[in-house]
Image: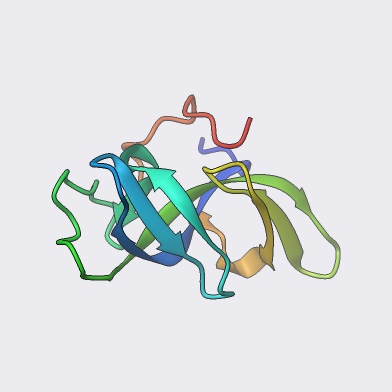
Length: 107
């Protein structure tokens, strides 16, 4: 059974300054940096080292750890770069099934 603590959010993904770095932007406008291991294509496939091509932005997913779900339908999540963000709980999606829950995010 997948944990409700380890989820993902849809986002826009572009290349960062280092080969393993990807920039992500959530629909809310919150943005950050994540290692390649914490981002996926929208269909759950892992990103390859050269993806997305330089200068391009793709739709994808970023790993989050749920800190708290509020009664008003909001959720506080930890992002891979250590930031936290408030999102609507219904925006949370399951991580790709090939991703283990042992991967810590914002611990």
